[in-house]
Image (cartoon, rainbow, N blue to C red; front, top):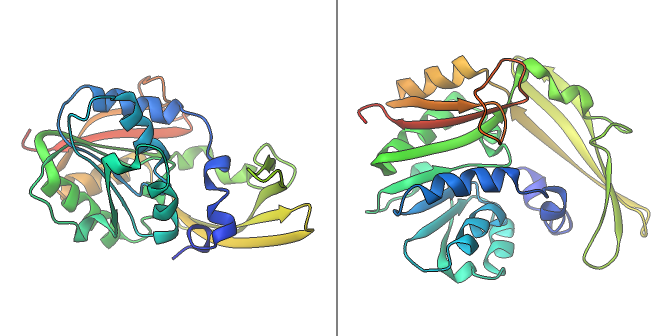
Length: 252
């Protein structure tokens, strides 16, 4: 498993590095269109799912968060309203439930952590199995045509300094190591300034074009309902940085 989701000192930085609620609002609006169960896949520290939970004050439906990293789930379970969510350690293909979900979603580009064709197919098939007839599987992925990794370097706008809850300053930047056939491997460096200590992690993300994602979804029995280019919901264009998809059962 990626060390970014395991090392305690790095896991504690996750929410500080993933601020902003444009994506949360988008998925919350999708959730608001139904009254059935909602699941976040790759929920991490639970920020997006709990954002939706907190918008729905009445306890009217089940919420499930699934993630393979116990360190991330420990933070999720410690947050306000966490008791309203069933937190599951694991992956979607292993998850069994009698419930059928009106919304399954992934955010923070978690889809790009599915590196193999098998992982993607297994996830799509599991989503199809768990969706209600009117259910939606929604997620976003970075558009490879925009080559976002070109900005993953020291001194770019992705080079940021954050302040922890303990008042400690941490500078974070990325350094690309390899670009190969749709895969980008990079190091993320975390400089704990007060301690003059650097902790580095290495990650690989997969970049698929829209047609490639759609083809894999259709093979698994899912159909493309909508695709957006940003969090306002505008129709996708090839120059957009985000590919935000809504998939539904092909028989729907």
